[in-house]
Every structure is written in structure tokens, then in C-alpha cells.
Image (cartoon, rainbow, N blue to C red):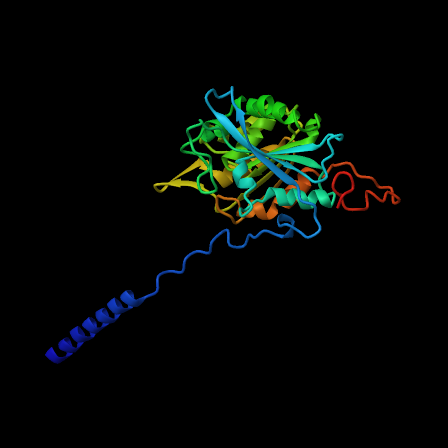
Length: 336
């Protein structure tokens, strides 16, 4: 009996030792795949041989009266095909430093170069504008977009018309001094990422007589400053003549903090909710849901498609003898 008990105890101790050793040497669970790992820039987002390159001018400083004591830094993209005698389309990008970053995820200037050349979007002036800041505050960078040290949260996330006034009453008059920009709101688009996306939507929502095309990447339609209300506002208000492209990912910020879920702070849920409201109301709306997190990887990968869709109604000649229409757009004056 004692021998059997001794044997059983010994076996139990050996088993415990094996279990302990297994636990000590076991591999940790495999990390989840990076949700952004599958998104890469395609040829439409990269410089291509033979495609005339536009010029980015600036930076320029725009004094601001809407938010006293602040100023906005902006750059202007002028395509090689721009003719000062012909009114051009306009596309304004919030968080301009991120959209024009030559090593970034969007590289909008390359997209415009390639698509303008192939007549897939009209000849357009591009504007890359940063959020407002006081002169002693740092300029936003690819690592720090300015949420903690600029006027970005107030300008971009507030549901009022103040930032729309910055764009329409301060930026547009400054541009008109140097460029012939179409006054047709159908020829004006505005876009951004995250808080810059809801800011773009707000500009068009408040000023549809000035802007009618909206490009939204991972838009912050959440309760930072009441942005989750937009879906209800869309349903309650009279339909506006807007065209909207929404882009977000299933791994965006999902509203879980300290184990508690708040749907008002779920980026993906609120983007889907806004899409459904726009659709129900009969808006010209398109959308793409990826696997991405909160950032610009997916948005950058599909930016050319978003631009093509938003600007798909540009003038087109169907005359088979129209040699100009059947050729690539060359720089103004016919120079290659």
C-alpha cells in the first residue's frame, strides 16, 4: 500500500513538473495579423514615367479672423495642364501635410498627376491645408497631427459653420487672387482623414453652394464633439446636393474603453450608420469597408478609385474624330 501511494505521489509530482515545464517553455499565442498589412500603394499613387508633374507651391500662411490669433499653413498643387484662361476644378485636403507627404500613405499629388493625365478626373487645383495654430505653436507633422497643440480639435470636430467660414471666406478668396477656379460647386471637392474627414463633411454640409463632393477616410463621426449626431441630422434635414465617398475599416477604434462599449465612440459603427442614413435619404454615396485600423493605409490604397468616383461626371467628348479627347492631357501650351 505504501509502495503504491509512494508511486502515485511520485507520478503526481512528475506530472506537475512536466506541466510546469510545459508552461515555462510554451510559445505565447501568435499575435494577430496587422490589419493594415494588406494595403499598399498602387501605380496610380506613384510617379510614372512620361506623366507631367504638377508643382506644389508654398507653404503659405493664411491669417485667420474666424478663430482670432490663429493662422493656417497651406500648399497649392498646380497641375502641369492648368491653363489660367480656363477655370479649374478644386480639391481641398484637410491635414494637408499628411496628404501631400511624399513618403506618406496618401501622396495625393501623384494621384492627381496620373489621373489628370489620363483624363480620369478634370484639371484641378489641389490645396493642402493644415489645421489652424497660434504662431508660437508647432506645425503638425506626420507623427503629430496637432490634436494636443493646435486648433485641430476645435476646428475639425465641432458641428458649426466656423471652419466652413475659414475655407469659404478666407481660403477661397486667397486662392482666387492667383488662380482661376470654377465657381460651380459641382467642380469643388473637399476631403480628409479622421477629424479632417468630418471637417470636410461639415464644410460641404454647411456650404453646399460652395462644395458638393466629399472624400472621407476613417472619418471621426463619433462623440468627440457630437459628431455621432450626423446620421440623425442627415435623416432629419432636407436632402442636400452632395456626393460622398466614405472609407473605414473593421479594426478602426471600436469604442471599448476599460471594458465598456460606447457606440457613440465606435468609429466603424458610426461610419456605417452615416452611410445607411445617406443611402436612405437618397444621396449619391459610395463606401468601402476594409480591415484597416485608424489610419491612412486603406484610404491611400484606394484614393485613386475614390477620386475617380467622386469626379466621374467630368465633361467627355464622344466624337470618334476628337483627337484631343483620345490623347493624354499634355501640359498647358502643348509642351511635353
